Image 1 (cartoon, rainbow, N blue to C red):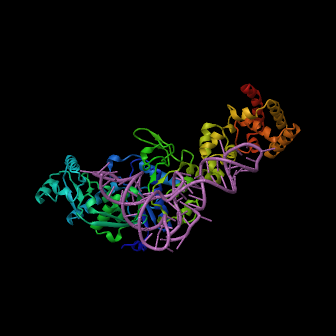
Image 2: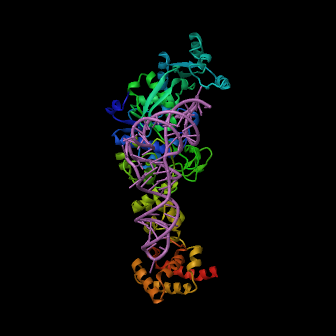
Amino acid sequence: MRLISTSMEKRVRVRFAPSPTGPLHIGGVRTALYNYLFARKHGGDCLIRIEDTDQNRYVPGAEEYILESCKWLGFDFDEGPHVGGPHAPYRQSERKDMYREYAEQMVRKGHAYYAFDTTEELEEMRKKLEAARMPSKYDAVSRTSMKNSLTLSEDEVQKRINNGDPYVIRIKLPRKEEVRFHDVIRGWVVVHTSQMDDKVLLKNDGMPTYHLANVVDDHLMGITHVIRGEEWLPSAPLHVMLYKYLDWESTMPVFAHLPLILKPEGNGKLSKRDGDKLGFPVFPLEWKDPKSGEVSSGYRESGYRPDAVLNLLALLGWHPSDNREMFTLDELCEEFSLERVSKSGAKFDQNKAKWFNHQYILKAPISELTDKVMEDAETRFPGAERSYVQKVVELMREKVNFTTEILDAGAFFFTEPESYDDKVVRKKWKNDIPQLISELSSAFNDLGNWSAHEIQSCFSSFAESKDKSAGSLMQPLRVSVSGEGGGPPIFEMLEVLGKETVVSRMQNAVETLPQATA
RNA sequence: GGCCCCUUCGUCUAUCGGCUAGGACGCCAGGUUUUCAUCCUGGAAAGAGGGGUUCGAUUCCCCUAGGGGCUACCA
């Protein structure tokens, strides 16, 4: 039985190994995050390696996108194509030449073989097997009737290779052998080679498949723990066999297969292709498909804060030893452990995501929030002063879930109300109100010191002098100035708006509203 | 179809054989806020079903059901 003890003496090294086939979705981001947290927790290294062995699926910009996403969330990698490192290069396409040697070595040792079958021949084999209700695999049984170095004569094989015939190298799996490995999250997993097939290791374009490349690179790069999505669990036994055949069994990394992030409705794992279809972003950053031009929204552009996204992602599949929910990156690094990662897939909960974001908006530094809001304010309300925007942010932050909502819900801070909340007007804009609001505006106009406190006492004494309850006047006042039925604390709101604006808006409302409800 | 993984409130989850099954989001009801989307208090809400093992099972084992993943010269 092999325990973690062998690797415990070694410095922990983990890797995040995305393929640059498009933007990273939040499941991928979480995998990256868990790798990072694990490395930090154990004082080890976390590197990023680009798995671009499929040239057909390469999408320009994807690699940059992945790196930028992680940076946005506040973490980066110790080694990778962008920073280099002792095991460079970190793109598998640039390591192409290294893989063949290992595949050839396996052939020499009898653990792999050349296969010359064409796509059509493979297709035919599968059809035959399916017709016979047999599993359609290229395996210990079916390989005997295919064109490979196990069935062809040595001369024939050599002739074909010299001739430049395309071929692949396949792993040669035994007919009956139990493959077992220990997964930190799932415990022991057992699979029989009779259920596996002779996977291609080296493709006919000379590139390795994922299976060969990830095992070779993980070994060469000193990876101690492979933390990846559950979709890799079925191929893990194959990887275990590769470690064995390459004589690296004693340093084989520890495996941890993470539960998948599922779609909130119905079923299936979250995928890149979900884009905006689900009604919430699946990508950290906005992404524009270079081919179709289609744009998918991102958390960043939707007004989410990176610290909030980080926090909610960390808790989607992992739970601390107590009931704490709010975590900074540093705290996560301290608390994280693979043992507390759950086994089952997690549906993404948009409500909780909103709640998290709200919590972080409440405690964010005001200047940071203002920076973010200023980006939009400059285009939506040209000429908006930063100091003014900051005051708006201070008042509005409690009311919103997203930074982007601040300017929506607080638009009245920048422009005259275009309409007035129907419900409030119907209920509160009584017959005597226009006159009262008009008089109140005069009282406001006479105020020397325009502060929330002064406005409030002026308001109170006015109400008292008219023998009206404060409540009956407050809503009409608010709606006359902002057009809204709700909003930030009213007197502070008035202070920020400024005396002139408030007075003129009140008068405007008096002129337009009675007609509107008549 | 085959193989593998999973299964506690609607959702994310705690529980590592003793449970009156805890927390959070959401929801509902009150209360503050003389407005409100904030805030406070309370409430409804769960261990898929069937067999074992055990003094005792949500916790361990088996079966069934359901969900998910994989099944490419993609990762």
